[in-house]
Length: 138
Image (cartoon, rainbow, N blue to C red; front, top):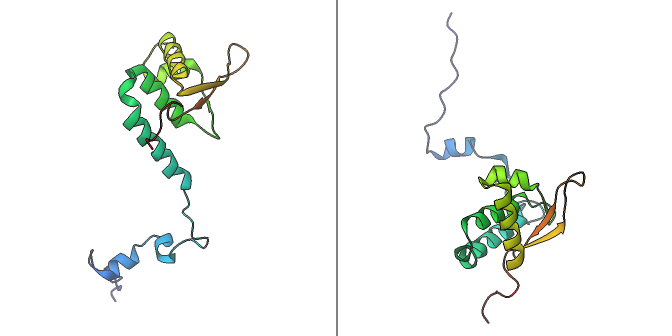
């Protein structure tokens, strides 16, 4: 007696194969609320695009790297990161990070919410997308 083998799957690219491998959320249709799940993601890309288009060319490399790291670390409006961690991740010295933070703050791209230090914890920064003076033309 021979065992029966299961049937072969349909060839790739056929409608049957596509239905078989659909993700559950695709098969179910739109979400019940009708709203996109990640609305904030679009806003974050909007901010990055405006930063790249309008501000990036006016900054030096260290400022750009520090701003991008802080922007990526932003949770609930602020980024909590030590300057030594920024230095390690950016390839700059701690002194270079401190200079970049001062320049970003002076340009209006960063606001120091809490200045940390030894036995005081990490600093908190609010990353701003564009300087207050710039904006869209009327």
